[in-house]
Length: 411
Image (cartoon, rainbow, N blue to C red; front, side):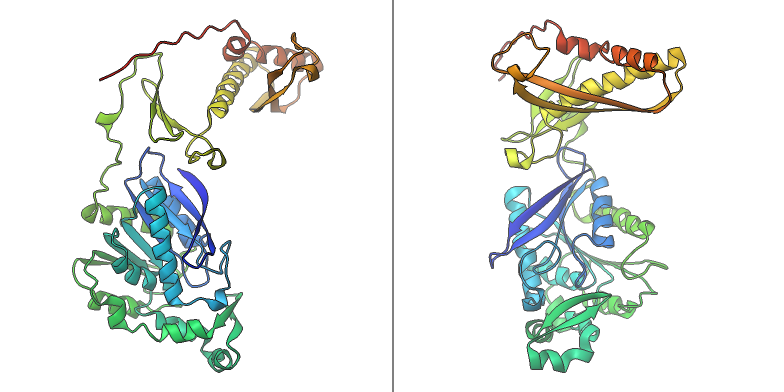
């Protein structure tokens, strides 16, 4: 599983901060958008845990902060339920353009009410999931009902909601009143899954009943026994992700990753194969028994879905060093454990290298730092450093290497 921090603009020009959770497969089974709860943000317990758990099940998820929250630009006091819907539409457009169109939308609490509406408006959405959601956006008005008169009089008032002070403006107050139940659910003809806890203290389970009764088939309800509104227990978030994935497999083609086993190239033992997975830098790396990814960071034009080629080179040297040291320590019965090898690569001026043969141009320098737990004599430690230099990959890198290349057209 990999996480990419992203930013994208909404229609008002604000930058919205998001996180893209992706599975380890080359291609996700499907992409989803997660709409967080009222004032929560993308890094809330439920959104982050469920998104990560879904990525582990092969479903990629974009979670982001609505305007004025978390890392996103704008003033929350100027937002409304309608601006949340616009943010979701802009997120779907960006996701479609940069990765692939979202087919699933998931909403928590007020985000669930938003998912019900946005799921109808975003053409690519094929299924909708709500978690602890109210039947109508109006439900959240009880959180600041005691300040309603002040909001109308002053235009914007700071209100404490769940221990967090946020600005609530007249735009939010008046817009919530424009979304009755029939407007929220009318025309909802996409598969719907409703999660709700019967002991939810913030949004009563009766709200889930209203959604279920008003929605068309196919629809399903799953009770989250003993779960709290925010799903603060990891087991509850994991349960939602697992059952959600199983449910989605009935309505979306997500039963297996897009990278099918028969698509995996055959590689002879002792060889590796590198294939292209996009027109930029994403590459598939295959050996006879394993597969993984290589990429470049986003600031280099890549998607950051895997280590860069130089990072892979350092990993190879580090792994070989660690294995060699462990074999030596076991053989000599050295009292050390938890051997760690940290490596970095840079290019330096040859004239700055005291022990380099050439003094012209630049040379590659790899710094390798070995740490361990335990006590060694000075002599034992010096011998350990000598053994590190004897690891096969180290000797290859410093040896006389010849790379012979041939080009061959296929098809």
